[in-house]
Length: 237
Image (cartoon, rainbow, N blue to C red; front, side, top):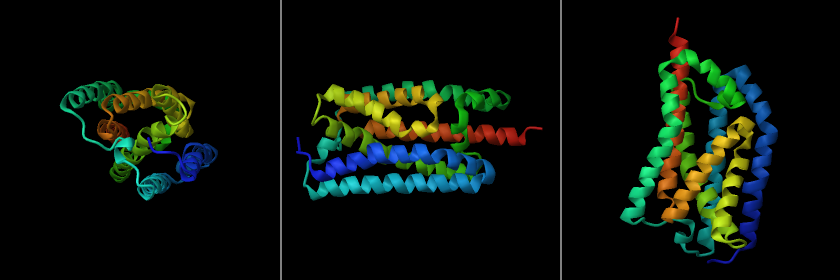
């Protein structure tokens, strides 16, 4: 395993502690801005999220390349057929668990009001129009690539320098939830579950491929069905 450098500690401090705290402090104001301005404010947040995590991913890649490290340590590797097949099957099961209830709600938009109250302010971040849905798809793809590289590939590697692998994996689950805690306390159980699934897929397969696809597909489908529900409400008499 590659040895840690000053840049690893600086990167970890900024990405896993600094930025999540910043998001927690600023999200209330951004939610209020969305409630006032609607689509322009929502699109602005989408662009900010894409640029921020893309910047962090580029920084990580630059650090890794400059230190001439082995990319397989980040989980950038090919998967054998058996773990690939099992990982895909597990991903389909958990995506279905999250998405099927949303799909059913999208068919019955009158029930959506109850869901909004359960979700809390996080619902303000979800797309409404087709334009917002397109941008949210961009957020989802970027999150699947950048966040999996950082929170699965890098964070578990970083923590594994201090604790055994399975401890590192468990701690990484919590850090991912903390980084998304700006979405509200009501979202934490779901985020922890999603994070645990992604970490398990990564540790089992040894590759980022399936966690990346799992993350992207889940987020894209969530955005699609939320947008569909809002459009159905808007078209209802």
